[in-house]
Length: 491
Ligand SMILES: [Cu+2]
Image (tube, rainbow, N blue to C red; front, side, top):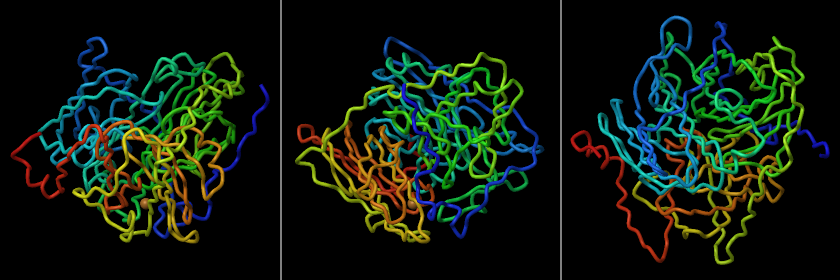
């Protein structure tokens, strides 16, 4: 195998990184003792019958020991913070019973899953009332194995509920992925890392105190709900499933010793080819799977994952036999979609900052369908960020219910790590990113900026996916109508 180029930059435009914001809160590591990095356990099914699987997920309040002293009041899915990891298999049929033990309406959105909208997908149209529950079911048909996540998505309280802890991993696997020569023992050589940031007031979260309309930033890193976490490395190769689960912060990842690592996957599956790099930037809601090789390390050594100059996680090297075998260039073959000739180029515009953010010049209206696309058609979309390249910001654009391929950035080739399917893409100020989009499930779906405060302000719109052979009608309720339901009627 020929030696691959090692990329050494973050690809994005430096002049619009988040630290140029007036309201930027620098990320610092507080002086707290190290502790074992939390690896969320795998959610066990209630029942399995052939290819049908039943799960229960409970949104609940709890207390988490984050800082020394007082525990922090947090929210989670079946845990006090974050949630148990849900591992799904392509082709299986799932029944999920979602329980809301909070004091307010929540929803559970499956970020990255191609499942019908707007109810199964779990956006703002699928409220779960306090003390109530919702049952959904779906057959999973993904384009491939991938690292997804689930998080609360009630309008307009997504940002606060995620800040309080409601986010968890969803890992999709399939037969092909299981046979690849990659680390795949969950919790041992295949670990999820959700990257977040929080500020504490007498050890408590106070979303309103820290709120920033341009995206709330936290002072301290919180990785898998742990500050200053340590992971004990027991294998030469470690696969990290990285998720930017922050409301607004960009993570610019690198190792303190600048070691190269291999990015094997982005949001919705593997890259082709994989790439080697020393720096990786993730905007909110983006994912990346990377494999790090510690074969050159001695037992007792420590390797630190950083964002800019701030340590995030400590990797303590244990005893293992080195394995310097590089990851193969090609893990999978990715189908190259062609745009349907009768599909019309779509243009969507992210504009403004602060309370002036808009999507296509408008604020979100839950009862308005903003555009339509035909089921199964492959359509090019130009996603524009009209912020000024001097002083503007990167808006991460996310679409529910589909995957897309990245075609170009301002007419140029996409970044080298954008060869795989994605559902979220960071768009630089003044940039137009062309993506190729196909929906394989029916429904009404959100598309929006994934800076959660921008989304809650209304930088969000809805698309209806239609099938001329199978017309559907959706009665879309406003949030007022949903609130008026409450609390007498439970769905
Ligand atoms: Cu935005």
